[in-house]
Image (cartoon, rainbow, N blue to C red; front, side, top):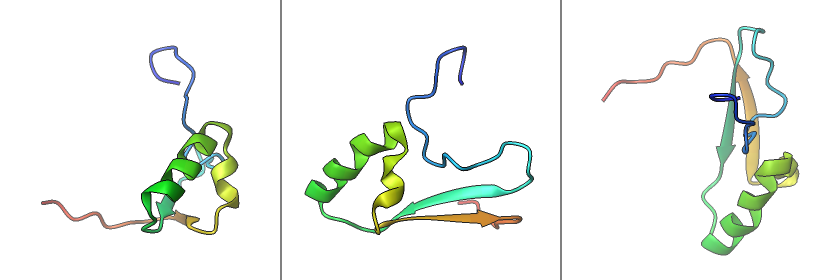
Length: 66
């Protein structure tokens, strides 16, 4: 929820806000037609079924500053 509006996209639907873990959703490099098939499924958390979409839970992640 942001500003009282329901979230439209749930990239990491299995994430738990207070478990201390960072949930990461990665999408492999895919062609535009495949992207257009995956994107609409995110609203209902159906993107989990695509082999090109993977999830990782991390306790710590180093993010370099540029």
